[in-house]
Image 1: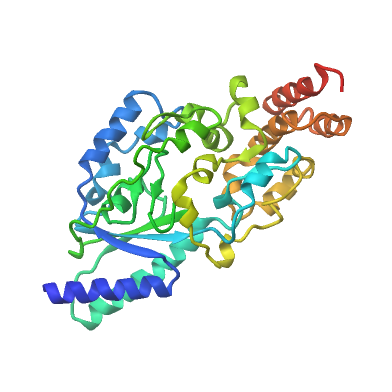
Image 2 (image 1 turned 30 degrees about the vertical axis):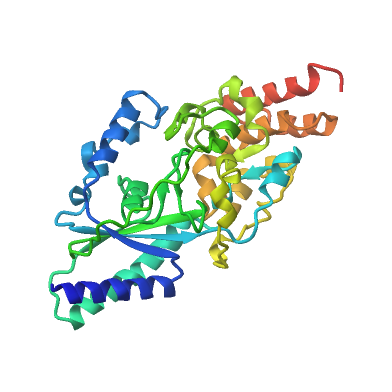
Length: 358
């Protein structure tokens, strides 16, 4: 495959990606050893909490050619997900409302991005057939395989990994999703990395409610509210219940204060728009959802990952942090007996309302 044809295909991929709604595309090689070393150090320090799967698959996370043999390059893409200026700060201040991370308020992004990646893959395949380029192979990934996606995107020039461990882009901030196409085509470009522009800023470190960012670029999952409310299947440690506030699924605090998110771009993609009023709903109403309602309203949503028991656990804590009133106590009692895990958090919440006179 000649250099001119490679350049032509890259240009075509940029065009097709934009037509499909992607905001940026880059091309990287498969060498991620430095990031692999950092991951190993992070795991050795025990900062992955009980996410044991992070240690699985050996070096596959930083050896993309082991995920798809013959891989020579990776097409990395990002798509913004802010549907409008988020009201997150207002919601966080209103303790009667439930805060849900912006990325999870709409349809599950995995499905949306994968469908777009499939269309892009078809266009590349058709181009190869038309140009008599034989043997095109690929694998699509969107948080669906053990790959260091942020590292790939950083190498492809889509941004830099910030002190909060999120990928940041100087013209779009960090409110975006990633997707990749592993391919045996030699599309990699060198020297496209963006310089790290966090500078001396410590905003994300200072604002984290649980001090989960132990040091610049180092996240302690055990303390992270996103972990505690989503991946965690056990009780939320008492020391983090007050700092959790009204955050019932995920946490955006480190993004809300990041200066680069002043440049965050909006996206009119219907799938990313909030569903069922989840961007501005009362905690009491959310807590009283039946399991059937939860399954119905979170179908095709990232929120389903927490499970109904985790949902009740999280909201019980948030209700415990709400302003004192007898109505909340009555609401909490309606879910008493669902499970020992939920009961523990309901009891804690009730104690917050009754330890002092209402």
